[in-house]
Image (tube, rainbow, N blue to C red; front, side, top):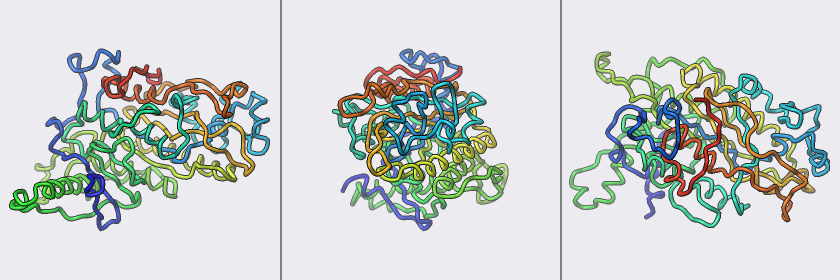
Length: 430
């Protein structure tokens, strides 16, 4: 029986959980790892003021299906854009102009306060060498940070947490909301998946008979791991009397996912309740609660009738991100949070005959947070230089984004985790 199959359980609240590695394998520390000169890798070249270890939170937003970059970050000054997109191109007068050549889709208007406050970075031309246009294979490459001809088992975050474990006092390494796929946390991370974002897990703890360890050690280990899952999920449920967030969240599945993510943060950082109700016995939860949260927004595989579908998705994304920022400010976490989008690929520059776009290569991605250095980064699209397949060439390897997280954000040795040296992008303020 495969570990990913047997480490699943159905809880009363309708959520599913996976925890491929026992909690006991973690560092015994109970507070966030804050690197010092002795344990911060010199290879990262990271200023200590920026690299605060897992005291810095990462929130990943997966734009599942492959978002169309050219109608998201629009090169309106390039006439080739309109030649390639006679039907679905976004007109200049409708778009939100960022500079003399670049604009945003009008549905992204809720992001403009972040742009004006210089806390939103847009990295253009992101992909990898010899890109694969299969949804399944390409997202595997992004999740494992592999080359296109390389097959790795562990997610890139799983390798990061193996290299420097998240403190045991944290509720989990990470929480996955709105998806049953563990993605970059696969095969080893101490992760919780809340498949139903509208509900938290409710489950009874499992007792493991001592004799079972002798009769069936493997089954006993499974039950112990599930026991740890339940404890962690229970730890993330809102506590009685815990202050409710005042932030208003948008409706829909993505809005529910963001609301759940913020509740996870609030619950995991609140003092633990003790059954006796004795305030003197309340224990802190261990600092930041989790090191990473991953959210998924589905529906970006826009082969047909893209304009209305993408506009709706980008509006959900922008409104959700604005609400997330407000909640993180309310929780006092905005300045130590980095939010980053990713997807398996972009779309082709030329529209298809169904008013949509087909699988392509590069796409822009958004990075925001209280310490993000705003601006346009990477390589803007040059539509006169498409390759033989009609795709844009790669401008930024996606692992440069990961190197930015691993090095400047967390203070880890990015080269060891990514198995190759990638330069971090200058997205963060010291």
